[in-house]
Amino acid sequence: MFQRNFLLAIATVLTLSSASMAIAEPTNLADNPTVSNQPNLIARGGNGKDSLLNSLNLSVTQKAEIQTIRAAYQGQMSTKKTAMSQAYGTMKTLISNGSTSRSQLESQHRTVATLRREMADLQFQQMMDIRDVLTPAQREEMAQHMNQAKENLRKRLGDRLNEANR
Image (cartoon, rainbow, N blue to C red; front, top):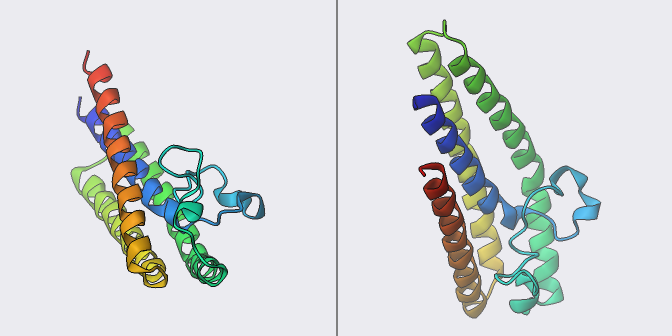
């Protein structure tokens, strides 16, 4: 039961961090194959048809500035994502191993928590840098899209939790 709940918590965190990282990804995923498997909130609007970039009516200058911001954070986020993946893998292995001590698990948990916090900080910094490029009206529109995406994610996760508890 503990292992199932723990793995569910990890999956939730990874899903939420992927969603928030999505703002940072380039809109042309063909140019960046390392992130092409992740969702991209800026490339997809709330309905999946219109892109958020188009709905925000960004100027050419704004688009260029956002691409520059993304590029500036991409290396750090990629490195942090790899470290998080390895740390989660180690945690999963330690949990599966019946002889792992409590102190080993606590230490690995601290490592995972630190990496998660560092990634969240990077994502927040990047979001603030992108936000600085937007007009107040564009900020409001982006906030609405992000809130809708968050609500959709909560609904999907809630549906999955309800199905798992049946």
